[in-house]
Image (tube, rainbow, N blue to C red; front, side):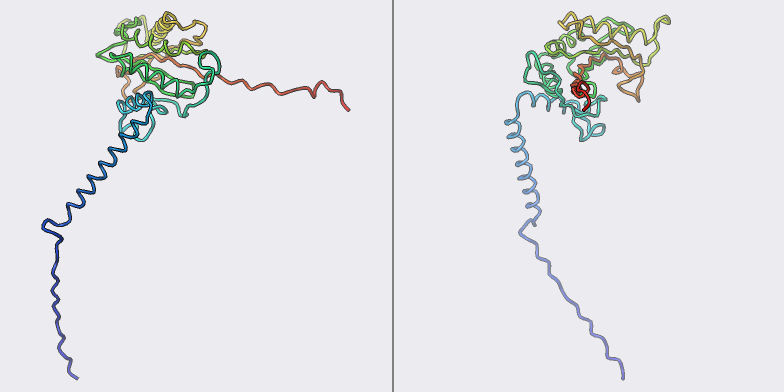
Length: 269
């Protein structure tokens, strides 16, 4: 049998476009509605947030870097600065003015609020983080507002204002305080003085200023100089921000009550 020739069928499909301009406007409109919903939700949340929390949010976004600390809370990770790994929240005081108990995060929030309301020059130089030790408050050097003259341990007026502001918040608590001094790795012009002596002298200057501002000297647990061994910017050892003072508001260690030993006094049966 001879093969029959195959039939070729051509089907024409006519495309129908919706409306005179297509349907792309619907996507743009949906994006607009979504953006407006997000905007009004943000406004509602801000209206429901307390003044202190709004200050914390403002400070967070002022220091936030998507590439360095994306997705991490500055209260726990310290924003642009290194901090401890704990989330804070341990009670640090049970007596005195705040007899109801207050957490590390709440003390840090009080500090941030005080900075925002009372400090205009140098507020970006004060870095606060909740750490395993307690609350670490760092006063960092800058070219615009130095906290020490180069190679000197004398606090500038900006540094004194920041130290006094910190003291005004923490002086009502019984917690011990540690004061630390840091330098960058730049060599000193005076060969008879090293960064070790300079860092200790800077910590001592900050200690004296705390005491002048009302901190009980008995609360100062230690004054330490770290030279350039604990840099804020490890990748840039000579960076000016490595020159700083750290004031550590230390946690109160809860002492475990001794176990009852009455059984030792009982005669054997």
